[in-house]
Amino acid sequence: MTKITYVTTHGERIDTEAENGATVMETAIMNAVPGIVAECGGACTCATCHVYIDDAWRETVGGPSSMEEDMLDFAFDVKDSSRLSCQIKVRDALDGLVVHVPSRQG
Image 1 (cartoon, rainbow, N blue to C red):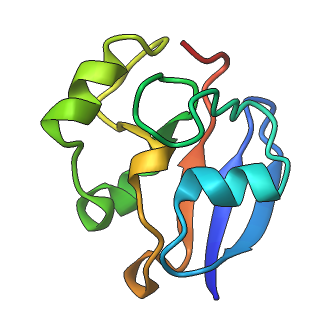
Image 2: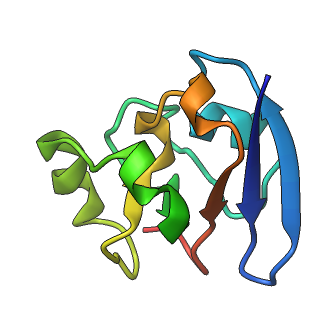
């Protein structure tokens, strides 16, 4: 299992275990992480699973695709570390990943 930590806007850390092949969004939903709405269910047609990738993990996670960049235009308070969690597939290399949940979704 791959460990992912979600940090809420209030600083609460939610440690989870994710199945490889799932997405960071699916893992958040299965663990009731507050602030991850996921209205489209992972189809990359909304921006309600927006997260900030912790700086230490940005290179490992990688950047968004052009389609994801287009959807990030609808997210609130986009930063260089912004990603849609539905587009990040869990894999062994992400063991220990830390993501931050924004104060609100787009």
